Amino acid sequence: DVQLQASGGGLVQAGGSLRLSCAASGFTFDDYAIGWFRQAPGKEREGVSCISSSDGSTYYADSVKGRFTISSDNAKNTVYLQMNSLKPEDTAVYYCAAGPYSGSYEGYWGRLDYWGQGTLVTVSS
Image 1 (cartoon, one colour):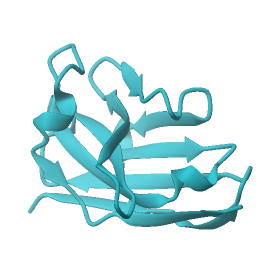
Image 2 (cartoon, helix red, strand yellow):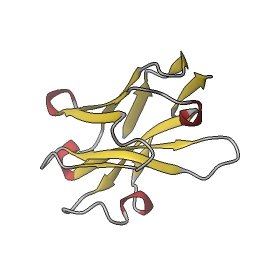
Image 3 (spheres, helix red, strand yellow):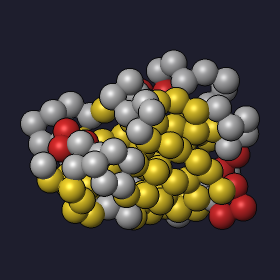
């Protein structure tokens, strides 16, 4: 069975940090880019960041550039999202997902194959 298990969410004050983890299993990790998207109440889903395990290329949404860092431990089939300088507007449920990658992230968020249950991040002001 395909599993994408997200963890690491919690409550943090503005300016603080959290590290999310996404443990993947049940599919060939190298064939996919692993991404994080978030959904806040009343807002549209937003693609936050993604990374390809095959070539290490990354993508960041403008809203998180310079604050979030995505990394991958291919030996553990795990992707991490280090979130620093958190803001109240980062509050959302964060989901990790897997989508096919062929050298470009254009259209990536519209072709996800798998995603997990999500982990809640709450940033207080």
